[in-house]
Structures are given as C-alpha cells and as structure tokens.
Length: 300
Length: 279
Image 1 (cartoon, rainbow over the protein chains, first blue to last red):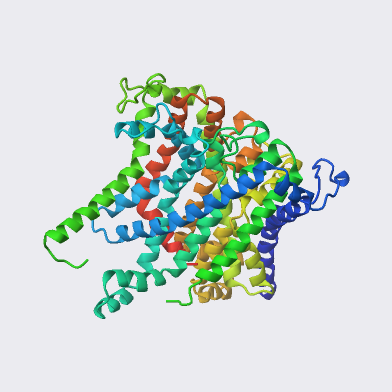
Image 2: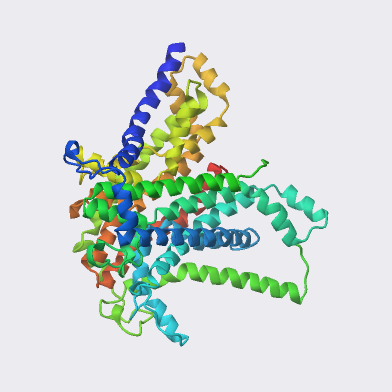
C-alpha cells in the first residue's frame, strides 16, 4: 500500500517532467545560450562564441529592432489600456441587461472563438482601399478614403483595431464571470448606507474584482507581446531584407516577427534568440511588476 | 435595477438598449459582410462601389475552395491534430492535477510552480529551439511533430489541480481501503467528479490548437499537411489578389465555430465559470 502510493505519483510526474524538459526548459536554456553565439545548428561545435555581439548589433546596426521594439510596446500598451476598461464596461452593461443576455454574449464572444488567421484575412478584405467595406462606409458619409493596411502610418493600428475587436469578447466574458462571483451582500450594504451608484461601482465593485482585474491585465499583456498571427497574415512584405510581413516598409514590424524572420528565413539563430531573450526579460519584468502593483490585499 | 418610471428613466433605458444594439452590430457586421461576399462572383467582389446583396447568388466559391484548393484535406488535418492534442492534454492535465491535489511528496510545490511558470514564457522564446528539436527528430511535416508540443497544457494542469482540491480526500482513502488501485481511483472517482472542469479545459485546448498558426507554419512545408489556419494564411500569399477565395476561406473557418457556439453556448459559458478563473 505504501509502495503503491509512492510509485503512482512518480510514474505520473516523470513523463510529464520529461515533456517539460524537452519542450520548455531545454528550449529556454537553448535560446539563452545560443544568443551568445553565431550559431550554426547543423554543427554547434564550430559555432563561434561572440559574447554580446548579437545584442549590440540589434541596438546599433539593425534598423528593424528599434522599430519592432517601439511598435511592440505601443501595441501592448494600447491593447491593454483599451481592452481592460472597455471589457469591464461591456461586462457591466451585460450584467444589468434583463433580456437578451444570451444573444449579447453570443455577439461579443463569437469573434474571440474564431482564429486570428480567419479574422485577419477577413479584415484584409474589409480594409482593402479600393473596394473594401470600410472605405465604402467612409465615402458614404463623405469622409476621405484611407490607405489602411497599405499606409505606413496606419497599418499597425489597423492590425491593433482588429485584434482588439476580437479580444474584447474574452475580457468581457471573464469580467462578467467575475461580476457574478462578487457577493451581492457588499453592494447591497453600500446601497443601504446611502452610497450612490457610481460610488458603489468605484469603491466596492472594482476593488472586489481585484483578482479578475489582475488576471485580465496580465493575460492581455502577455498575449499582446506575442502577437504574430495578425501581423503575419494582415501586413504586406517589408522591403529589402525585411522578410515576410511587417510592411509597408518596416512600419508594422514587431518583435515576434523579427524572431521568425531572422530565425526561419535568414537562419541567423543567434540573433533571433537574442531578440527572443529580450522579449522574455521584458515580459517577465512587467508580469512581476503587475503582480506587485495590482495584487489585491483581500479575499472573500 | 431600481424601478422608477418617468421620462428620464425611459430615456435612460432607451440609451441602454441603443448602446447594446450598436455593440452587437459592430461585432456581427464583419461576419455578415463576409457571408454576403462569399456568395458573390469573383468579379462582383472587386466592384466599386461594393454591393451589399450578391447580384447572382452563387456557391461557386465554396465548391472551388473544397475541390480545387483541397480544403477538406486541411479540415481533416486540423481535426486530427486538435482532436488528438485535446484528448492527450486532457489525460495529462487530469492525471497531473490528481497527483498534485491528492498526494504529498517532497518538492511538490517547487515542481508545481515550475510547471505553472511556463505560462509566463513567450512562445517566441521556445519556438526556434523547439523547431530545431523537431527537425532533428525527423518529425517535420508529420502529425506527431504538430501534436507533441501540445500534449501537456500548463493551464490545464493548474485548473485541474484547483478543481480536484475540492474533491474530498475521504473518497480516495475509502477506495484505497477497499483495495482499489490508484489508477482505478483516478479513472472511476476523480475523472467523473471533475467532468465540468474537464469540459472547460477540453474546449480551451481544442480551440487553442485549432486556431494556432505559428507552430504549423514552422513545422509544415508540404501543402498536403497544412492545417486550416495555415491554409488560410497561404491564401494570402498564393492568391494575394483573389479576395473571393480569401473571404470564402474565412467563412468556412467561421461556420463550424458559429454552429458549435450557437448550440453549446450555455455549456461553454458555464464551463468557463466553473473553472473559476479567480487566480
């Protein structure tokens, strides 16, 4: 009996651990390690060690890195800043709607279930400058036509708008579930004490949603840092050595795309893993920071 | 809501429903436009100004995409990959969740944290080494190459442990006294009692593997082995100007999702509620 209780957990944990080593721990260490080399995957033994050269090159020579870094930061900040409050507002609307709630959930959540690829290619059609839906609407209300994805000023924001349109359903639903879980006794008590509606919302409901808020803001941020599918299918090929997507020019380049283009298309593994390592450090620091700042100090 | 009747309340109510209506329209309009366009001919779809209703209702785009562009094969590939990944991930998540919730062993919390910490690691970090590994194992352009990295779900392990903590340990101990094997306890007590959480994890894993593009893009180079998202992305680089194919491709990718969601909405929402993302 005692033996069996030892054998079973070990028999479960060891293969799972094996998977983690192969597909998580080994890749992370590999990425870190190779970022200091001019890595030749076919023949690691002769790969020259170059120290921080890959990193230095990114910050000094490669024009794409700086653009990609700024674009990624803009993208992540805007997405988080928009998705979190709007999701909360939609969830509140949903929570207080007496009829048609199922239909409302259906509408808002439907895009979130579809793949980014399908949504992305659909929106390339809607954004099409000449016969697309959006310019058709703009001319109908007598506004000037826009370049959208073909304009280097707008491409990144067009992708961002599509991403937000899809992602909103997810954050709304999670906030809605959070709202259901907030015990009504708190808001009722505040109401009896004579607090106004806005005051109740701001001083009772929002703080009680702390855990949900933390989860959504961290999840949205990590998710936005990894944006790849939308950029890859929606944007045009960048010029010169730009590789796939990220255009026009380098205007919608993001870090994940740089990893893909350097690693897969130009086979410069060391440089690609250096970009990945920088991405990893940024994500980790920001995640821990959010935990510190937003972590609620109460339980219910 | 507090019930008071008067012109101001009526106006507020009208505004309320107006807002919700506008939001629903914003969310549904792209889908509506997509379906309308998918029934238009290749010439009508690029007409300026665009038409709302198709002039000649045609299913040609759908038949072209299935016959000439072999989308049935891509559906099949996606189904195999997502189906197998989901079943395996459900098995590994529930088994690991069971062990973490009902056994005590040294270093348990450290191992658990290292398993969950994986959620913080961007895919961009692991994807290149993973690709080189799969290439070295000669698994490029295979189902196994697509499935192997999806077999364990850190999120699934986390949720299953959370849920199984709530199942009384007495049930497990009583079964042990009756001479049941550990695997029997897992199969006949833990799994049936956590079916709600399993449904939630299953839906999420399936959607995640069904929708992903980046990993198939790395592993698959043969057209025959493409998954659905990869085939859709390929439409934009092979048929860059063929918006009839692009919009029909998006439509056939959305149709199963819409049907499933329409029928299983309550279950799905309940599943998400039950998994209780309260962190």
